[in-house]
Image 1 (tube, rainbow, N blue to C red):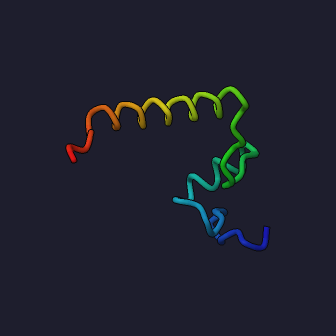
Image 2: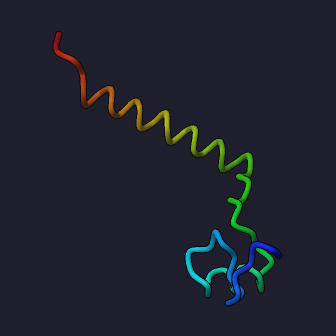
Length: 61
């Protein structure tokens, strides 16, 4: 709580109202951990984007 501003917001907050909302909701500035299914989807998406890039940007050498 030592990092809180006089208005109630924390130093790392985007706005004072965001900090106050986070305090009321019990959330933190740290990003949430991804679930295993979300990680799997992100990896799959990355592979699909890489494959599409390779097919559309073939080097003509």
